[in-house]
Structures are given as C-alpha cells and as structure tokens.
Length: 139
Image 1 (cartoon, rainbow, N blue to C red):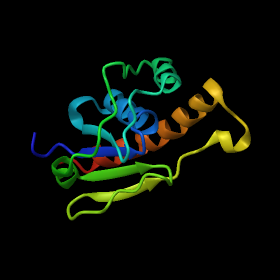
Image 2 (spheres, one colour; image 1 turned 135 degrees about the horizontal axis):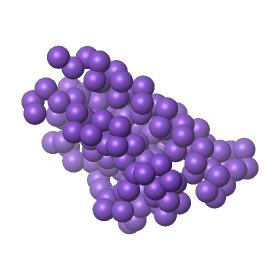
Image 3 (tube, one colour; image 1 turned 90 degrees about the horizontal axis):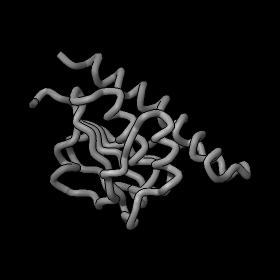
Image 4 (cartoon, helix red, strand yellow; image 1 turned 120 degrees about the vertical axis):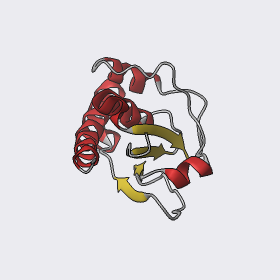
C-alpha cells in the first residue's frame, strides 16, 4: 500500500532493542504500518532474554535475525528511529530521523530478565506513541 507509513528501527547489533521495537509495533499496528529493523553493526543472533521478554507480551521474534541497514530501504522509509545513543545512522533525504534514548537499567545495577522487562516496557510506551501518531495522520 503506497500510503502505508513505514518505520525502520535501528540499534547497534539488531539483536535486542530494535527487534523489540519492531516486534511491538507489528503487534500493535499489524499491516497498517510497514515495519523493519536493522543494526549498524549487526550481531549474529537475537538476544535470548530480549526474545523471552517479548514472548511475555505475546510478541514472537523467533523468525527474525540481525541484519545490516539496507541503503535502499533506508531511503524510502518515512521514519528512522535509532534506539540508544550508540546507534548512529547517516541521515539521508526523505525519512524523518528520531533517536530514542532508551532506559538502560544496567546503569542502575539492574541486569538479566528484570533489565529486559524494563527496556521492553520503555520501548513499548514509545512504540505506542509513534503508532498512534502514524495512524492518526493516515488519510
């Protein structure tokens, strides 16, 4: 659909935060938003705790894998969202670029599944707001 809004979520490894954001948006928006994720330096696998925390909210990313940024895809997106301060994407004409400086519980000594749930919940709030914004501007 040509008028379907599109979003590319980017983090460094594309194994955690960007996969979380993409999975959460796919669940929330269905096919009303075209959703992609990528990494600036993609890892090898999805973060297991990240995937497990998503399953707790009925989001399954088991079929996903880390991928690099596709320049052609990047150029045709409506929004490019970087998650965290480490992910840097060179801006191109076309997309609106935003950075989500996501919660990092490990800085407060919170690790493991408790950390992942906090990260997931922070991202979920941001995804809900973006989804609402994208779908409210749709003709």
